[in-house]
Length: 171
Image 1 (tube, helix red, strand yellow):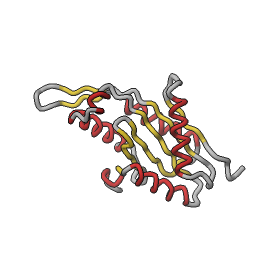
Image 2 (tube, rainbow, N blue to C red):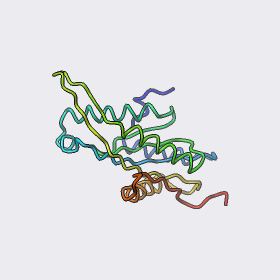
Image 3 (cartoon, rainbow, N blue to C red):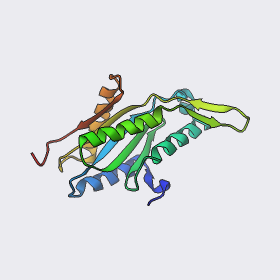
């Protein structure tokens, strides 16, 4: 099994890895999730407060616990995470995976500090995902589909939407 360090990539590395996964001729396709974190410590994160990095570290730790060896994660911005899940067989499984990440991120973050205080942050994640049955969809298409889904998800009560994009090659 790969280490957590190998699973955490830059956004460009994650997209390159996703394109490699898409080029394989297998029945299961990758799922790309974009997560808007909507952090309660957003101002501190924007100001690059050191405590904000502790929160981001906890977020990545929670995500990494749910990744398999072939899955990847990237920090796209202080308030945005991308997750690439390899080998997703269908849209129902893709939605279940996205829901599991949302539930993991809803739990408040409590980090003990050296001065006997506790740093607390709450996330209100909005998750958009894209998955495809088509072998002609590129990683750029998946990323655009995931961003579009996240925009739509922000308007929904469950704050989550996974879309199947592209034509089905088996239809």
